[in-house]
Length: 165
Image (spheres, helix red, strand yellow):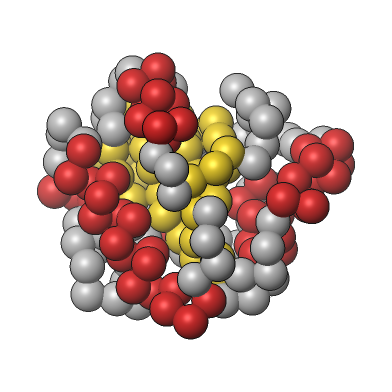
């Protein structure tokens, strides 16, 4: 698990609204079998994963949570972060505070539809509080493809200024 400097938090704090939808780009450097809370052990292939989340309030605090390994994992993403490297933080451009759950699921569906590989073991990961297939998406091993796609998406903006890669 890598550590992040206060410099990164200082760089992003003015770019983060009070609430909103966020996207984490994570890299798993090798095939891994990870304990995912009540879901038990799950096999994850090496590659890049996208995780879509939301914060009704205190979005900056939620992002800080994802930047360090929690001592007691709470969400599926916390278990995954123990082995994966965070490579990018993206936010949606508009504040969707009135309908965050719908916007979160919509973004996850868009990203899932562009993913070439669908892993059944990811079903419902990161989305236990809604009815959609999941907010955790495998995007393969090509970082340039992911970065290019996200950069062209006019509804997303990267906030870490490449400091994580």
